[in-house]
Length: 84
Image 1 (tube, helix red, strand yellow):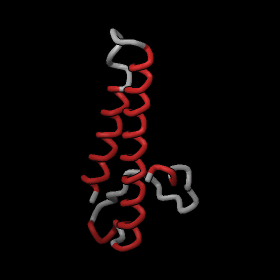
Image 2: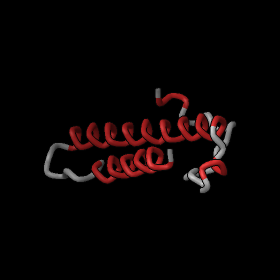
Image 3: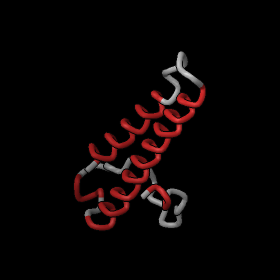
Image 4: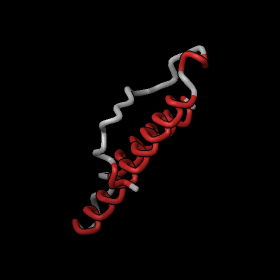
């Protein structure tokens, strides 16, 4: 469980790092590529939060012998609700 959430976070950061890699192409293309990369990062972070919420309610971290949650689960966080 922890590895899936960690992977989503890693991959979100990977997308954000790629948002500004290309500079030798027209600005309109750079803007589109950047928007795409940031959108992918948002989707992955939304998935990480969703899975963390699902798993924290069905299998408490203490049963696994370690605190596998990467972030605090906040049930009022609806900022990423449009990432679906």
